[in-house]
Image 1 (cartoon, rainbow, N blue to C red):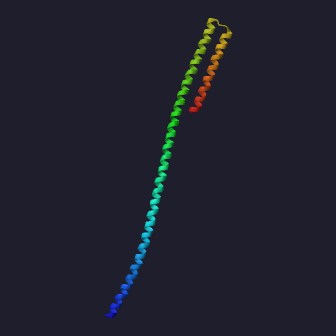
Image 2 (cartoon, rainbow, N blue to C red):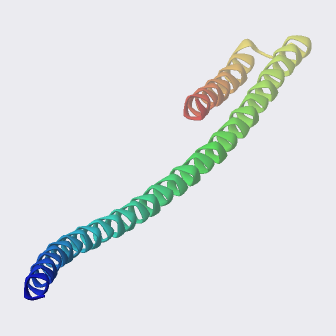
Image 3 (cartoon, rainbow, N blue to C red):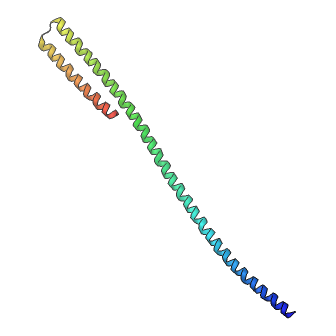
Length: 136
């Protein structure tokens, strides 16, 4: 019976040693799991932060695109207005040239009026070209 007790005592000691080994492995696995969980949480936080920055940048870029579209639209409107003004000035020039010819105005008066209108027309063309270039 003492041999059986000794064998059982030996088996218990082996089991206790194995239990100690398993307990050590469990502690190591638990520590590794906690480290992994901590790294994953840090990664999630970093991803959230980066996503927030990217969303802000996208929002700012979208706002800038909208502003540029509005500016382009305003510039196209200005170009159209200047082109209309140039047409009106051209029409005035033709009317004055015809009136000068029909009324027999002196060549100097017609030339002066024509020069003034041509200067105005050139100015309107320059403004239209500048506005067109800004709109593009």
